[in-house]
Amino acid sequence: MGFTGDFFITSTRSVNFPILFPPQCGNSKRGRHLEERALGKPRSKHGFSSCENLHFIFIGRVEKYRPQTLGDLISHEDILNTIQKFISEDRLPHLLLYGPPGTGKTSTILACAKQLYTGREFSSMVLELNASDDRGIDIVRGPILNFSSTRTIFKRGFKLVILDEADAMTQDAQNALRRVIEKFTENTRFCLICNYLSKIIPALQSRCTRFRFGPLTPELMVPRLKHVIEKENVDVSDDGMKALVTLSNGDMRRSLNILQSTYMAFGQVTEETVYTCTGQPLKSDIANILDWMLNLDFSSAYRNIMELKTLKGLALQDILTEIHLFVHRVDFPTSVRIQLLIKMADVEHRLATGTNEKIQLGSLVAAFQVTRDLIVAEA
Image 1 (cartoon, rainbow, N blue to C red):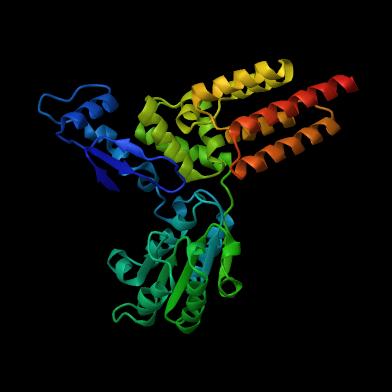
Image 2 (cartoon, helix red, strand yellow; image 1 turned 120 degrees about the vertical axis):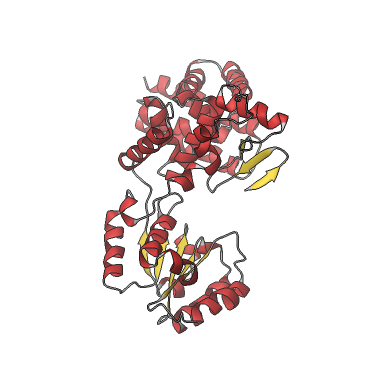
């Protein structure tokens, strides 16, 4: 967290934009004005605001509702049961937890650490490093080696080293870590956490027990989101809940960040406000774009889509992703659908290489115009 003028700026992983909040009970004129807007009412005559009602705004829901015990975690029961058995039998191996962000990897190992060590022991028995720290070979030869090679006098058992986002470590650092793991296994257990298993060298993979954390299913995410919504007394509609789950793609952290951002910006969470806050095109917009491309002439369709993109600030990549889902639902002949998907894949590839969006939009509209002509010809 950093300060800039009269604002707090917070930013967490998987969020592509900062969230600006007024300072808690700040006394600047600008801070008072912004806080009154957030609260929807003026401050009290004593100069203090109802900050307790916005407590979650300043803490951030991700950390406030992070699971504290293994029992609080909502998914991957088979992995949790296995790790719990390791702990109960005092046979915890080196661990390698991998998978997409927001699926509970860090929360799982932190819950394990809190179960293994009491509050006083935690700081002396657990070393946690993440991507904000230096991840070169010096960090392995320095803090990690020093921590792993020493024993505590008043506590029996092993120490725990947690290396979050280990795939950001350099090749030399990973090779040095391999030797440290071999040498101090009796005294220390290592837990590596990463998003991409392929970026971890095979020598480290073979020394760890691997667990993959897959994206969370909507059935698991909805109850947890409802719990947060109930605790924070947030106004969320049914279509807003569905939008949160859809846009998060199984990432619990992202869903909470979107929930907080949308509520701060609009005061209520609906499908429209969620899509507007994240900059994603609405389903109605995608339906209109498809209708224009299939039923209007090229110039009219291109002009209408450009006006919509400019008005709502939409990215062609996001439009293309949503249209792809619609294409599978529309009853196209198989051969026509195959040709259309190939053309859409070419457009996406060219967008990824940094080409001009206006030219690629023309290519996308042309692909649908050709598709329409093929359908008419086959009929």
